[in-house]
Amino acid sequence: MIRQRLRNLLTKLYPDEDIVIDYVPKDKKGDYSTNLAFKIASRTGEKPETVAERIAKKVKDPLIADTIVYPPGFINFEISKKFLLDSLFEPLEINLGNGKKVLIEFVSVNPTGPINIVNARAAAIGDSLIRVLNKTGFKAEAEYYINDQGRQTDLLAISIRERINQLKGKKAKIPEDGYHGEYLIDLAREVDSKGISEVEEIRRFAVNHFINEHKNTLKNFGVEFDYWIRESDVYQKGLVDKVLKILNEKGLTYNKDNALFFRATQFGDTEDRVIITSQKRHTYLLPDIAYHLDKISRGYDQLINIWGPDHHGYIKRLIGGIIALGYTNDLIKIIIAQEVKLKRGGEYIKMSKRAGTFTSLDQLLAEIPKDVVRFFFLTRSCSQHLDFDLDLARKQSEDNPVYYVQYAYARIRSIIRFAREKGLELPETPELSLIDKEEEFDLLKSILRFPEVLEDVVRNLDPYPITYYLIDLARNFHYFYQKYRVVGDDRKLSGARLFLVNKTAQTISDGLNLIGVSCPERM
RNA sequence: GCGCCUGUAGCUCAAUCGGAUAGAGCAACGGAUUUCUAAUCCGUAGGUUGGGGGUUCGAUUCCCUCCAGGCGCGCCA
Image (cartoon, rainbow, N blue to C red):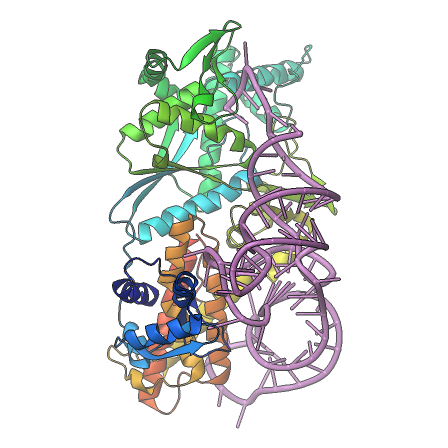
């Protein structure tokens, strides 16, 4: 990684400085730059340019072909062409994780209805993060948590029972805070045909039904989980009682109004939280803390949860619970994936699973190709709101940038097939010194930035820069392709270029794979 | 009221930890193919980065304030 090498170089010279390496704008000389001179000058009171000149003289490495100081104090490094060309031979190996074990829990939709579009965004983000982490030396696993106990599944079962009554023409009333979606009618029919009528049994059947449905939907979306953990498992392991005992012993609970409160305010929450209601029912928080204790005891170095924005108020109390058990708060990191707003007919749709007004991922995938959806979700940072206009989705899908990227790949594969027809195979030892055009080097530099993009993704735990990177890489290829031929009369030059574009295709393929998008050989 | 997120070209969005003259795509207009895929490329046009103040050598980025929008604030999850 070139950026890292430059960083190490400067860190050796200035061990106390936090070295930041940036890219140089296209109209300036050089490839990478640092603002180090500004930082030092602001402390010493010198002119940044003077400091920059001094630093520039000290930095020497075969990697650097030239060092240019730009007023008012930027130091730009031009990377040696030989180094750039030699880098093409190196396989992509990035170790940022050192085998660190990471568990990402995401989607975790309640088994009370289909997966909706908002959940799908989290699925795209989480799955991509897993892939990137595993590519960069972490050992990352994906987990899906199922709330198969508690009030929501009670309401589900009762709602289904009432739908059955309705089907039979009996008097039926779905509870106001129950599930009113029409998707339960078919399920009610199925439950009834199996002769199931007791609420507890309905619950069990319905929960399993939705878990299977979620598995299938996610599989169609290209997302697979290593573990499916049920809330009931957490109870069976006795972890809920254990957590309750610990919290009680530490004096972190108290009784008030017939309910048991957890002293969440001691951990920065705005108020203490009920963990056992006056009806002697556990709130979600208690088994959830227990569930996280389970995760921790399975030996992970880092836990990551991806939640929707409606849960942000929940962060303090959960992390509070984890700290209360004696762990540090940096063990867990919670990513809030901002909302997806659905638009139809120019108007926003208010989505609610309980009211039954939402669009499911299955419905979306029936309309829009998976590749387009996944790419689209990752063109926004996690923290950005995202508008999904269903009317325009189809139209937008046609000129979606994902095709721009895939097309570059397909073009290259076509070139490679063409070369083979002409008797030109991909050389193992190409004469890369024949590469000398500006467009060729722009493409080459773009390829070499890939690991740096992954480094950014890991640092911010946000995969969206990959899509922008791939568009840029594809663009650099298309520019090159437009101006120069790969397969021509000069076999050595053709071989070198074939090597370069093949590396491009590999990088595109790697990148698309990291965001769960396919890579067609022909388009 | 409190908390979180957002406001950048006509539209959808970038701008990497505070860097250099704020960039792409779409839409509009004008061009490019005897040769490896035209789902491509070139050109033209498009901006008071919501307003104001502050910190800084430097602010789309950080702080304050105001305006506008979304979401959350339960003994539901």
